[in-house]
Amino acid sequence: MNDISYKKSLSSSDKVLVAQFGKFVAHHRIKQNRTQDEVADAAGISRSTLSLLERDGQTTLNTFIRVLRVLDLLYVIDTFDVTEEISPLAYAKMKKKVRKKASPQKDNNRVGESDELSW
Image (cartoon, rainbow, N blue to C red; front, side):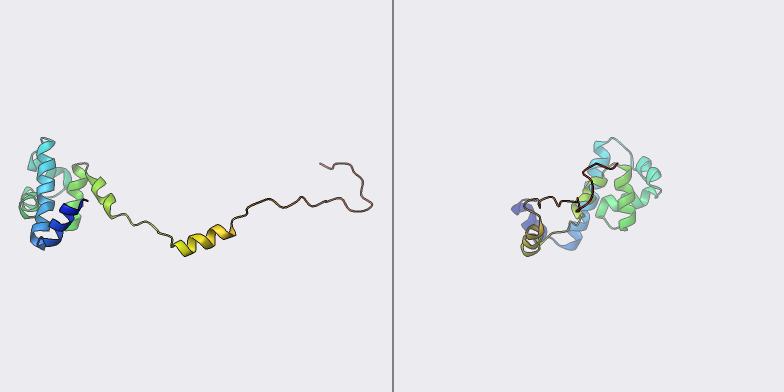
């Protein structure tokens, strides 16, 4: 996200932001040349629910996800992935524990044992 769109989002009301979901769905549905009836049937919702979603975004999250799935747009959910971040201090401690060189081989032959190899 660039600075301009971020600042625009910050200054937008909740209603405007929710309406963007509807515009997004409508845009991609039309781009795929699909009718509201087709998408609604495939998502298992009524056409009026899809229409409401496209008009002002007012619908459940579950409905929104179902429509995204039908339109093959679930990739937008990847934006919400949470990744574990490691602190610089924890990373330094972890790197300190990593071995930097190998230890010399210990001699396994004891006094009195033969030098033959046993399989």
